[in-house]
Length: 67
View 1: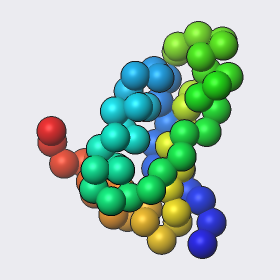
View 2: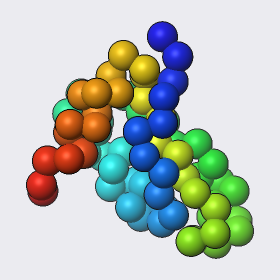
View 3: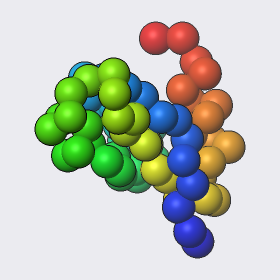
View 4: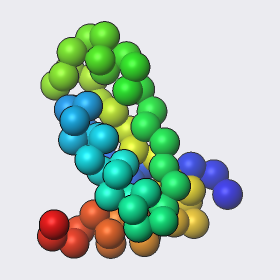
């Protein structure tokens, strides 16, 4: 029951959208490094979207669906 990275994004806005999509699908997630990315600036430091390892396949499938 560890965490796994489902995506790495370089925009805080995109990371927030991905988090919202996952949470709307009932998948809990956490944004790692979002604080440092906002200090350094977008495009330089990646924001990791982390989910429970058991939910990784479902999360990838959810993010692969078109909006």
